Length: 138
Image 1 (cartoon, rainbow, N blue to C red):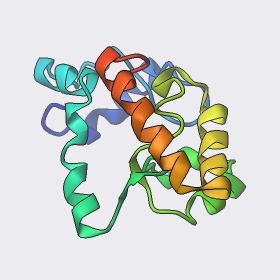
Image 2: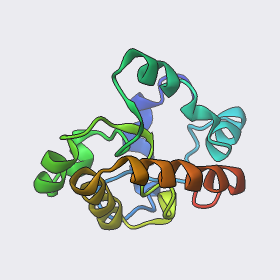
Image 3: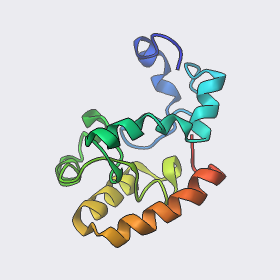
Image 4: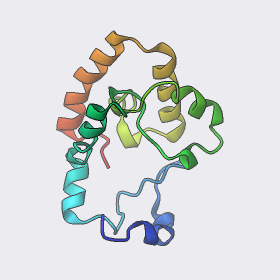
């Protein structure tokens, strides 16, 4: 992102292509060329490894989101907060940003309610092709 990107958020809000409250703008002018490549290749996720090592995140779990993104989805926010956020999760391997917001929220709830080690293993295995193909990445 360019410097002071948050200060220009109101200027690009109209570019959001996402349904629901989550901001998704593939043509966000605040993203630099390097940032675009980092995002498409999922390399922008690597700093989250530090959060995993510190115990603040899990490798698999619901993606960290702003609480404002879950406005109107209070039950989903409450249920998904029962587990640590993760670097990858069900909606990352099920379509990533191409999924409607309601589906992403539903998959986070499914993960929180039905967690198992096996679900984490399957999600990790499915993450590899999702990242390598860039399918659904924004």
